[in-house]
Length: 75
Image 1 (tube, rainbow, N blue to C red):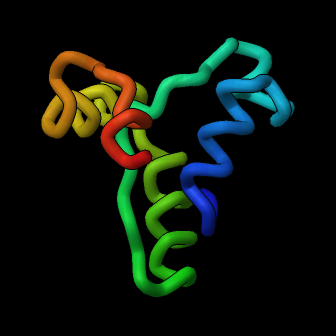
Image 2 (cartoon, rainbow, N blue to C red):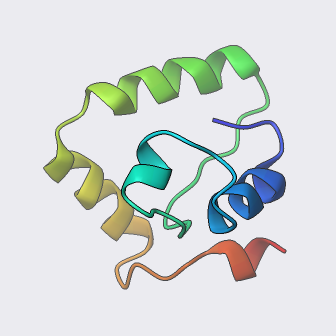
């Protein structure tokens, strides 16, 4: 979750962030959601973290079936 999506993606693409994304060299934006209220965003993030991998893949593919990097669409 980030309040500044473009900055966060740039950090991932340039390996500035640590943790899971750096460990597995994850640097593509394949799915995102916008929220007006930070509390709703936090609740959604917690919900998604509890999901099984297959559910997350179905969610991504429902919006982005080719797994394109969506970064270029939002800059």
